[in-house]
Image (cartoon, rainbow over all chains, first blue to last red; front, side, top):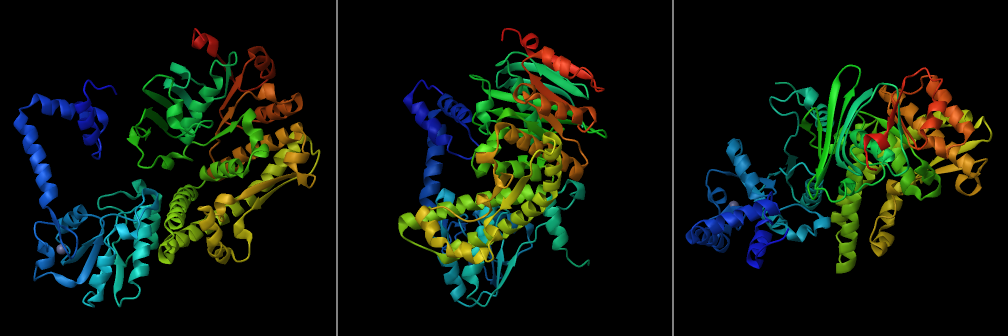
Length: 200
Length: 366
Ligand SMILES: [Zn+2]
């Protein structure tokens, strides 16, 4: 793509680094900002700047938070004997929206992937093991995405957790509610048959 | 299974092409360089989701154009299917069946099987083990989805493990738990892939031998043997023990990604001791066995793509192949020939209908 200005090109380069945004869309956004009042761009830049400068991550679970300890960790009614391990804060929000879970979380901040240069030390694994040392936790729930990297990470975590007296569980995976068997992929269906549950 | 039509935009040398195909034999003729093989490759795309010749998808876009599109309709006998494959330069390939985008493109493989016989097939004898594994994987994948899924997973895990080895090596560090997190699934998936390949070769071998005997008039004994690290008594132990070497080379040295299939003639390696004719008979028999095995397992006759065989095969083998055609062994056939008059003579006394497409007339100016 050829740009009329180096400034436009730089802005497009930065914006197109965002997920789901290609160069074309980025250019449209940049030209839009130039067309709008200067203030629009200033407010956007300020909000983003403030976001980065002031956002906090919970010292216990690494969830996004306005304070040092997040609302979930500081709650007195949550079950502190359960920790649900997730990849990101958005997974915490998704599980919270189900209103089915009353334990605590631990946000890993990603999954292990040597191809992308991400190893265990890049994730919040040491702090998880520190939390475990308190002996308060009775169950760890692995709730990572259904990718190969997540599977590897789960496998690695169970190795690291085996020295603690704790029950390790994993969220169930299977045929979606309202889903039809014939349209369920063979791997999921095969797994659902193998790991069937007693009928209640 | 009947490919009824093909629609191409900016695919390889084709700017635009629309063709209808009858059920039986479709003979694509025209001078060399007119794009006959590219047309077969487009059909290969519809069945296998990729080119048989160039795995880099965006290199199959017509030079200078921003995208390519390959579409076709297949009548399975029970239902009609519309297959769509398109690629915009720099984007992810879009692959749809009846307008529904696949979540994983690999899910399509095996639904509409195809077998391609090309002059390049002798590479199977001449080249390294990778091309032979690819041939076997192509065949098994068209009959077993779980196999393909396991294979893709395995290859991905090997790439991750190799990157991990590199990281360990470069940073002079080591983490046994992390290595085990790759070893365990690699050993597990490797075992199931090995078992499948082993069982498959057992099924494939007699059919291959039968075909070779037919094609060569039982001239000489041939053999096909599967070789794998998994055949060693304690593979798992050996694999783990090999970590020093793996770390030095920064790649995984043992496993099914190193498997090979040994081709022999009269107890000697075919590559060194087989004549050109014997090598051609061998690879044609491999491809015919591929066709038969896929048909037996799936009860679906693969589309047969024959690239330039009248030119590259001698009369004996052509006669044998045509004997199979006239016996109704195959389903729909697509073949290419630079010399239309030769094809016309050879295919003259077939019971099946033969449709001719002269590409020089269909795409003027080439
Ligand atoms: Zn917290």
